[in-house]
Image (tube, rainbow, N blue to C red; front, side):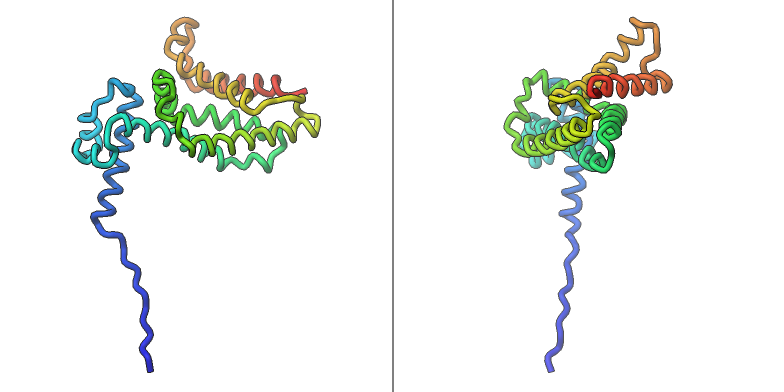
Length: 218
């Protein structure tokens, strides 16, 4: 009789787990540092201190501060696209789907203020860190196609006017939330109103939804 043998899976070594944990800490620390100080002002020493790592490990994993920034920017875009992909928009009527999308965009900016400052900084760098990212182009195309399908469905059922372009619609949805938040401090002074109070944020979201639906609906 032959004795059966069982395959025993070998758990990841502590060294591998430690390496992954270190990389994650570095990425979190780098996101915070770049969001606060931009690419030029960010300090590798500060990232290392926050990540409880050393500069040698940062350069080992990411080669340079420039390349680390590139990873952070790409991940920032991938994160918002990943969360958007989880929205169950296709199951909703077109008008409701766009309403949910406007809400998501606004709430994502509120939950992730570093996203706005990171994108601002990448624009100052003329998008040189993401211009060759094939993965960003791929996920962005899927996102645009998805929104376009919702707009087309709305046109077909008579809800939306004809000729709507998903890219233009998304730019408008992003802009009316983005501008409000990037200018919230100066706006609060100029207009003598607390732009970031709970009441003001709720009113702004309602205004954003109303504005977008007025643009899209017949």
